[in-house]
Length: 199
View 1 (cartoon, rainbow, N blue to C red):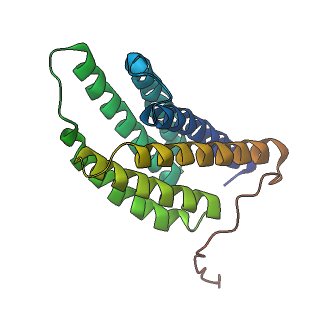
View 2: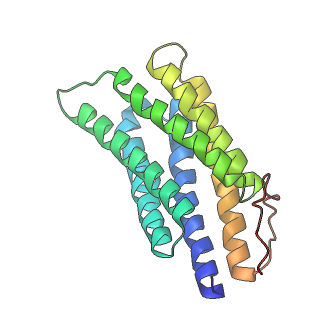
């Protein structure tokens, strides 16, 4: 991989993570009651654009630069935000008031997906791996919330944690891409791939 491709990959990751940060922080604050219900449509639009569209565009660009792991994660999480936001906007803007249990299966599938991503990102760096651990817990708690087993407080707090961690990693990626040095520490990978020695 050339230096140009390396810098482009980091820049794209930063864009996707900034989008995730904005979407997750907005949703988390709304779940904790910091944003009134009268602004629910606005919250969903922010989640749709930043959590959905921004991540999808960043993911597609990452795939274009042959970054399958980052591209898959960004696009799949982006499509989650896009789908859920659109469905909720339809529910708010029409007479079709959908039950929240509708979102339990998709949250369950994404909890499993995030668990896989936790393992894979353990080969990248500590921050990205821990971020996916929190995302997995967030999806799992959201399943419980959609089944009315718990309230929105725990998912709300977890979304805020996801937002801050995504912002932190985005800043770290951006500064490293710009300076060529890791000014904001991401931590070493938890797992290391064994490399075959060239003959």
